[in-house]
Length: 96
Image (cartoon, rainbow, N blue to C red; front, side, top):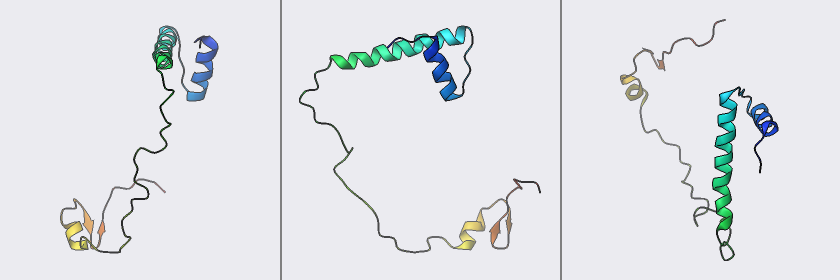
């Protein structure tokens, strides 16, 4: 695949990035090197290799969904930098 200005324009539009001058040439060189690296994978013989569908043989390894209290409110609030009776106090995020 040839990396040209059209390819860079399309990728920069998709990624919402802007490349100008030397930066644009650097991106072209980097993309060419990346693609040439991946083309070396075509030299490998993969005829007897089965496609990998899952990373492990385990399926649906889930824990039981049991409601439990691991920590009390008092323990949770003990080291809070700011608290108000039963709640953590945090700085305002939104102004009205």
